[in-house]
Length: 107
Image (cartoon, rainbow, N blue to C red; front, side, top):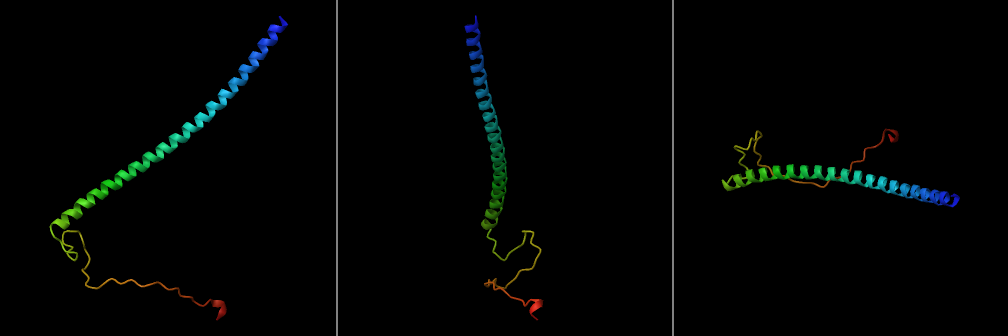
C-alpha cells in the first residue's frame, strides 16, 4: 500500500509540473494574441486613413482632369474659388545665409 501511495504522489507531482508548463504556455499565447490584436487594429487604422487619402486624391484628380480638359491656362483662376490677385512676377528662390548678431555682452 505504501508503494502505491508513493507512486500516486509521484504521478500527482508530475501532473502539477505539467499543469504549470501548460499554464505558462497559455499566458505566453495570451500575450501574443493581445500583441497581434493591437497590430491588427493599428493596421486597420492605417488602411482606413490610406483609403480616405486615396478617395480625396481621386476626387482632386477628377477635378484637375476636368480643368485640364476644358483648357484652362495657369493664370486663369476663374471658377476655382480664387480670391487673390493674379501676379505677373516670377518666383525666384535664393540660398539662405545665416546672420550672426553680436551678443549684448560683447558691445
